[in-house]
Image 1 (spheres, rainbow, N blue to C red):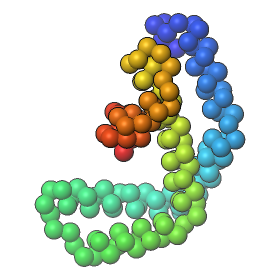
Image 2: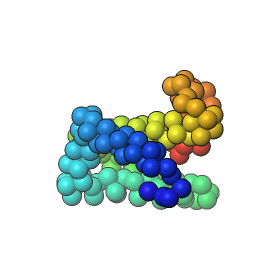
Image 3: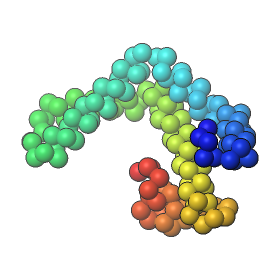
Image 4: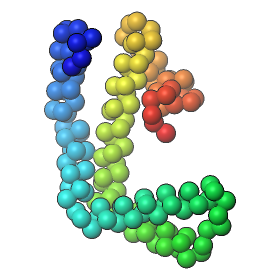
Length: 141
């Protein structure tokens, strides 16, 4: 940890990280992600969907007319990904892990802003991280 962080805070951060790592739901989400990453075909399909989707989005934003063949290929890939249990488990795992990260980040951000431990409503309510209007700058979408 940075020398700017007091040892008492470092100890609490380590305790929080240990609690997160020991949580059965977190472990389950991590296991699902690891299972997906070990499946080369699933990873390839997921990568293909993401890459083609990104390419089509860039073309669309730049005003290029999208080819029907590209759209059909994307839809086919997307349908395959939607029906793939491993990909769906991975996406659910990513979502669960991201929610934990956003919540922890929201608490820390609000604590630094307010100088006290915030209530859950302050963290996730309107204007807070991801829970209400505007996202709160926490990186969630």
